[in-house]
Image (cartoon, rainbow, N blue to C red; front, side):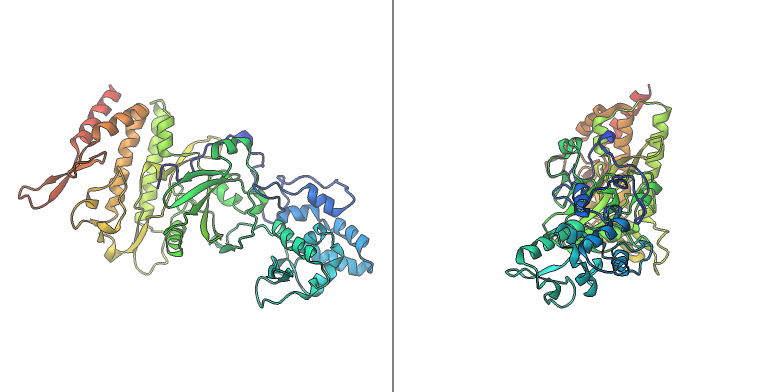
Length: 509
């Protein structure tokens, strides 16, 4: 994966205005406007006044609709557009504003909101009689010329309740519904992932980015792109996701996210998606704090997406742009982080938490390198930097009998950190692949600690030598002919050993 593939954007804390709180799905939220005492005369005016500015289109979340369409306001609106008994109006109001704690009750909150916006609130009775509630939205266009609307699920038959509507009115209903039916991203109660297969007309609940974000990420919001995927910065509206508690558990920010989209190529397929998803489900920040946490996945416009917390940068960028003082606090922080990512790798290699497996299985990451180590800022008072292992796109999960016999031709090599078994004829790849690449990363990490980016560049230059193919490379080993000239053996380059010893001695003197 390319250097800027991962979540690598810096951002100004002052540009984030949402309050960092945990938000239950059905509770009020201080990120929403305080409209309790807004006494605008018409409910549709209130809706338009407080809609959310999205990246591309405006929208309303369910929580915002609840804040605006209180039962008192709904009753007042119904009295103005329906000539019905008080009990009849109360019944409609109860259906539009049911108790959010009652999961069994049908809601007409979104349906009534759409009717308000298309200036047909008096039609609510027809929708209630047809039991066309919020759960049956969005409706789909059945016949484009006449704009006949039908249910998204079930038989494709025109809905009779739209028979008296003019074509422009049906078009307006169809287009407006997408502003109301934005997805709410969450997990099931057991923390497994909900399958989100979003229609192409879906408006994603991404808020408009601040000027700082636009400068850093560009108008597209893209912060990294590689051969397999691209990563974009998004600000998911706080009332459009249920990740607050999860992120609070691992001390990370819950206001800005990274969305990874698999590229439109051979990588954007269900097999590739399932492979990465399965690994991320097995190995995540809830299992070990130094593993990246997958929050959600969704399919949108024939592409697979992953939602992650947003990192400040990756380790390679931290090396490029930061020099730490060599003191006791730096040594402690470095020791904790190196121990942490090694513990995370051990969790991948020996997943003791997967006790449901009938036979013992072993994981392998397969792509340990500096730009796949992400750097987060802890959301606690210390604001410590936390290093986590990310990008499980090349990971594998094998049974005991096959843990060490994967042909090297089937494993993409890691440039720079490539281990010897990738180049040896008949070589096989095991978890030792990760041990070698982690060792290379550790060596560069300590080199940076002792001398900053200058030492790293010097180290890279001095270990860049001619390979047996005649090309120059900066890998950490060399292949040499065996005594009988029948094969090759691998040895750590003397340039690596010498530079390491000399450099550390100089730093300590």
